[in-house]
Length: 194
Image: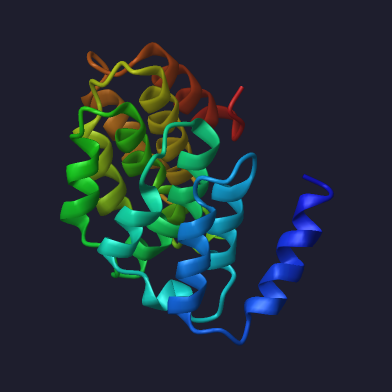
C-alpha cells in the first residue's frame, strides 16, 4: 500500500485531462489485474473530476463484475456505488435488489452503500429513511459478511439518529444477529464499537 498509493495518485494526475469514458475504459481493463487492479480502478474513477457525475447503473454493474472479496466489495460500495446512490445516480430499487441477491457479496455491497449516506468522511449527511429501509431488508440475514455490514451500517447512523437506531434494535431484537445487537448497543452506549 505505501508504494501503491503514490503510483495511483500519479496515474490520477495523468488521467485528469481525460474524459470520463476514457477513464472508465482504463478502469474496466484493470478489474482483473492482480494484485491491486480492482482497487486501482475504483480509485481512478472515484478521484477523477468527471467520472462520479458520469456513473450510471450500467457502468456500476460492469465495474462490479467479479466482486468476490471483502476489500473489493467495501471499496466499490464506499467509493462508487454508495456515493452514486446518495447523489441520485443509482436508484434505490437497484440497491434493494442487491440486498435480496442470493450472492453474499452483492448483499454486502447493498448494505455497505449506506456508509456513503452516513459517514461524514464519505460525504454522508445522515439518511435515516434510506438506511433503515435497506437494513430492514437484511435484518434476518445470517451470512457473516452481511451481519458485519449491517452492524457497520447501523453504527454509522448512530452519529445522526441514535434514537432511530435504538428503536430499530428494539423492533428487530428477536431476529437480529447477536453481533449486531452487541456492537451497535455498545456504540450507542459508549460511542465505540467495542
